[in-house]
Length: 250
Length: 323
Image (cartoon, rainbow over all chains, first blue to last red; front, side):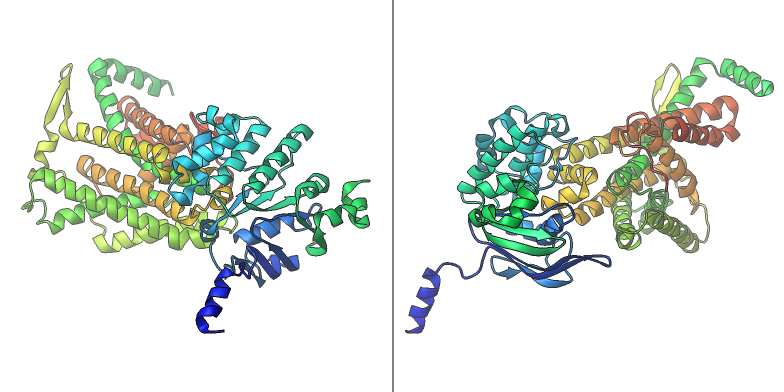
């Protein structure tokens, strides 16, 4: 092959690197070793769930991905770029967004202002970003002048998702989306997650609720005290004996 | 006690309505200065939960920068500029200089202690207080600078209008209007601009704000800058109006502005504005009716009362946390 041909084949080939890759990450809080040699990948357009009980290191994984905590060893790569030493805002600018645990809305600000904050690095949000979010959640348009802190739990969940989607992320992180929601709302919430995923956004969902998250995920990881104990296609994990005993309760 | 009450009664009677108006006028003017300084306390507390005790000294440095500009422009006896451009330059340089000072203080005295126990930045703040006061003492050789006694500022002290025979001077109107203008600009910034919204978001939940991609360090720097700019403006106005500027002046004025921030509700921007005017008016009436020696007792009595009975202040939502 000539040089030109090689370049051409390279271009045509799918990207060799995953969207997100954690490579043997060790994260500490002070002396406490939280994440222990964690390897994790999310491909473009994939829906991956990260399961685990309390204090298994799920939230720390997300904080490491976002750069809120720095790993002591290992690297975090986004689209093949090593972002381990980059700031949180740099990573978010690259196309990562998060729906944090307990939603963490800006309570004294309006729904509209919360959405604007979601698009902070994108000049405050173009009209089409608002349109996209309002199409997904028509209720938010109605409530846009209301203070976010005065909304119900289900409505707040919509604001949190809308806020994350304002930045048109390529990777959406979700930290315990089912937490604190009534079962009917959990179901609706996951329908929306599925819908967003089908629009082409890759997702990493951190959950305790293995049942519902495995039902929509492509792949899953199971974390226990900072180590991966299981990983594989979601369908396989659903049938896995240990997981069923530990998380699915059947 | 009886004697004091009698004296107050006597003063109220002898000063009459005209006297009361004069006290109100002086209180509102003084209170406008307190409001501007209180805003810096309240904004920084809102975003970092830090009592920035060095803020009163930023105000003091602002007053001296104004004086330094005056000296550079030929001094008060032969200023190179007319009164209006002279004032504009003094304000601009003092505001900018104070703003930069505030950013530098945050960067070197507070940011390295961001995750330290809460007592550490407080001690650091006291260190900055001594550093600034001693530096200015050295630079100015402990002199008391007075700018208003010079003829160039004469027009400021002519009556602009009268209310029932009581004159209101140009400088008094200037202070109140400038303070209102700056506060309106601040409200616009905080509620209408992207930076202001980022400030509110960061103040409510810093980690969540950083999860949105907001560079919270920059937002905190901007908060210190804006608060210090307001203190710098108040410093120049203080110099013009009350004249006696020396290295220790930030201590008492800073504490009174802090009282204003607590009375209004620490963390609340409208609260700082309201608290400043209230403290100014109360101080003025206390001085006028009970005697000048009572002013500080009454103001700090109010501070203690609020901290004990209503730590959230009049408009605030969060109480000062014990450190």
